[in-house]
Image (cartoon, rainbow over all chains, first blue to last red):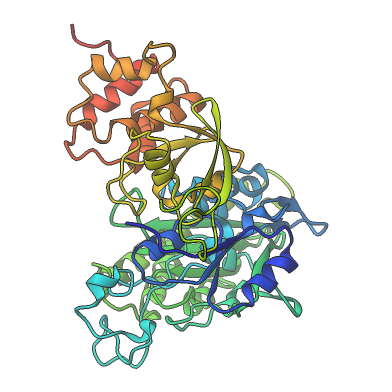
Length: 339
Length: 174
């Protein structure tokens, strides 16, 4: 398959990139592992591509003054997964980065690209030729959804692995545009609409990812289940950040974020509330997992039934809480404010 | 590729090509390429290096694997112009002075080549693995080649060959 023709530029600065991206029908090229497939299949045919990897320092991982991390969007997932700065204190992000299309995609794909990943759908992610046999869906500018007959909205799944852990950690993103910078919680970056997954406007680039220092006595986990171990999207991804009281071992706070179950990354707020303030025991683990499965409304999609997906949410949430709990018990008494 | 350098053909069409300077198999080359050319097309069609194969063409099978700065990548999903100043190794660059690389010899000795279509990608993936981890376990080899599909399904012999080349496997049957 040949790539269609496009204008191509390698800007030297973010400002230059933004002014190029403000022009009609222009897309950011970073790792290219999603974009080039869509171009080959003619799912999208942008007029121009702007390669942001040419901008200096956009692939840096740095510690911030408040003990958090600042990560450039052009950092490859492999660099994020292997960086000691990420691995030592933000292990759940490293786990998730390594799990994206493993083993090969992480060498090419970028963290910014994963955050900006488009919604995924069996009917949308197909070649133009294949799609000619069906009327256009919401995501292609039509008025119907092939996944859920009669649905009034697009049901493309949000499948990015690195996003649930980053939201669990309370990460923020900076969007740079022709009119200046905006900072927002990563959670607010997503619209929940399958047609347009995030709030990026023409002329804007996701220019930085900031993760605050994890709270004292917290521990995190990311678990992914996919149909194939290698080169596959998640059936369900569960990220958990568990903060434990060092005095009595009760759960001080919990953040549970699910991927691949909706059109956006989803906080399992009922499960979080059930865990908060309670003493961790096996009964609580089961309660939280059941709530996480019940409060989501997955649809049967991409070869996975809604029922199966619910079972996986329940199982992975159980495993995540148990694992975080074990890590918390092992960490207590070892050092002040362990993470 | 229509038109010569200087635009002898189609004067009214702007030349959108970019100069690409890249080291391929130890030799530097500098060519004008269209931005919409993938690294795979550049290697196969502009340089005539047909060892990297085109199969799924969407980053799922590993047949097009080459090493860019020592890392295995799917060359079907990399723009050629994105390899400016980089070091690319294809299967053609592995043998030195007509002497096969130990991995190539191990693949032959262990019968790890069936139809041969996946072999260049497998060997380059294995090279990247052994460069980082000279004595991998069975599990580590399996994980490393999980991004490469062998449709003859001759995985066992491939794994044996890679471990033998790494010095941790059984010797080949004689």
